[in-house]
Length: 230
Ligand code: GDP
Image (cartoon, rainbow, N blue to C red):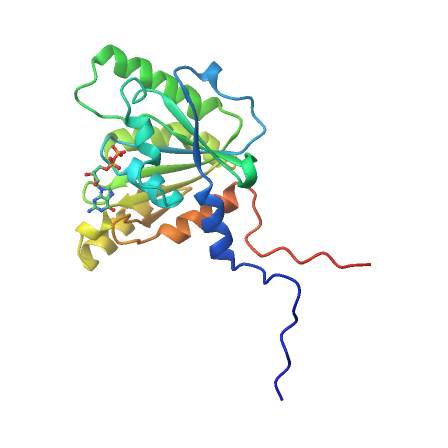
């Protein structure tokens, strides 16, 4: 005999649906030219870094399921800034996603490049609110010298508990065999972190990345038990 499902209380959403809904609340918060313009700590921050054209804006848009979101960071005057996006339901801010300037872009003058490398280095080394770093690299290029310099810079913080993942983006452009090879090389190069295949175009690795970030922000992955009436 079938037992009737309990009625009245709403079904708890699946973990994936809850996490999707949380990311969907992502909105532009502010753009900062210097570190002292960043909000005071207290809210967990996840930084997105990578060479220009690695697919960072597309990745942020995919996470949030919003087509234009991170192109806010590409507006004139903002490409060399830290752009913060707030995440949280009903206007609450549970976390910030920090879109750091893309590096390695040839058209930026040397003086600007140096200044920005310094701001980025200071941010990555000193930002207390930082919980995790997503480093995006084009899967066809792998971890380049510039990416490695950034990972080396992070190493002491990673040893102290900072989380990071190297995303091999545009994985759809590689064959299965090339993907496997790129992943094992990247895993060897990023000791202390992890590497994962990612494609915004083919939705490869999107949910695992959402879960990872959610977890890094201290959000509970398992559904919360409903409150018991006493
Ligand atoms: P950003 O400079 O790092 O923000 O890079 P963008 O997000 O602007 O992406 C750079 C280029 O890569 C654009 O032409 C995107 O359409 C393309 N791109 C981004 N993600 C993917 C992907 O998953 N697959 C493919 N094939 N192309 C992608």
